[in-house]
Length: 199
Figure (cartoon, rainbow, N blue to C red):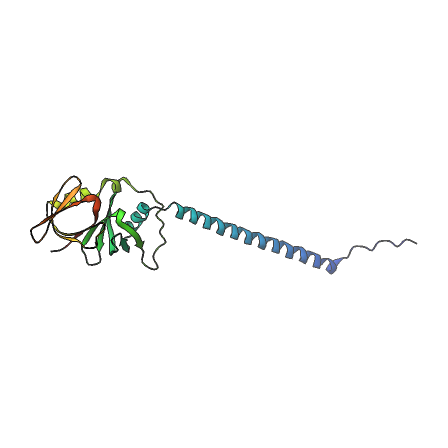
């Protein structure tokens, strides 16, 4: 005698299968969402890394000048200067010191830039405009020499500045008249800092 197959379960007996299918669907959707989130985080990290890799000194300095954040610059002489960047040139950075005086610094003499804690994460990946290229140390000094300002000029290889008055400017040379009556001739290429003093 052949026993006929049992009829499919009816009513409540089929509900657990539907619940399992719904749970599986929810689990699948949750996994897909998690994988998408991980992919997005990975992509954002990759984009951030690419941005950081394209950072350059000129772009960072432009960002800092526009934000007017206080920075601390370490120089080849071992000295540090703190203030806000007021102007940039192809080989020049004008820093307004915390005391109010102005320093013209050679960009080539900057060894480190310390940003304030809690500040924006700047990487300097932006292009630098033509305005930066038009200004250089010599042209900045040329604008000042007529006033014969009091200066302290620091040169590469020496932490001791040359104090005096900015007296004359040559093609690649500046001359400082010292308080003792002597004149010091300084090649522009050797200048680390021209600190304009109040007296």
